[in-house]
Length: 167
Image (tube, rainbow, N blue to C red):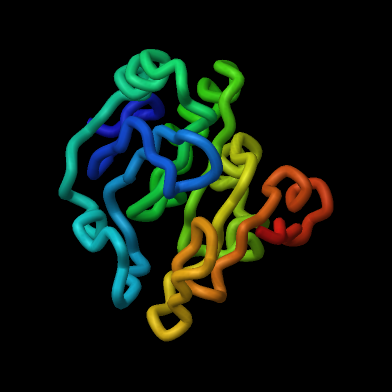
């Protein structure tokens, strides 16, 4: 059963170095409406796949790794489960770790929706935009296609517009 403290995940990686700067605990959420052609994680598209996981179970795993710089919330689509992920991100910030969230939506699509606000408020960096296979670029850091942006989420919220970080 999904609640404010439980959500559906496809899996996690305890110590990723490809999902953002530093060593990251990466959570792959289950369920995605975008179904981008060439998606890196097509197994996450189904909303009924994966497993139900509690925030506390993931926090225990995160706390057990003293080398982490932060967590990365990837997909699937995190903004399909914004409430429990906002709670997870808030708890991670309380541990002094950073939060990166990947989304197929753009910042502009998310900004005006109050359902997404808490997750945005607890995200340090947002990688936004659908993966577009024809814009694939192996040279991009932490992104798959040229249309995707690496955003300072807190500055973006403050200014009400996307603030891109040049990598």
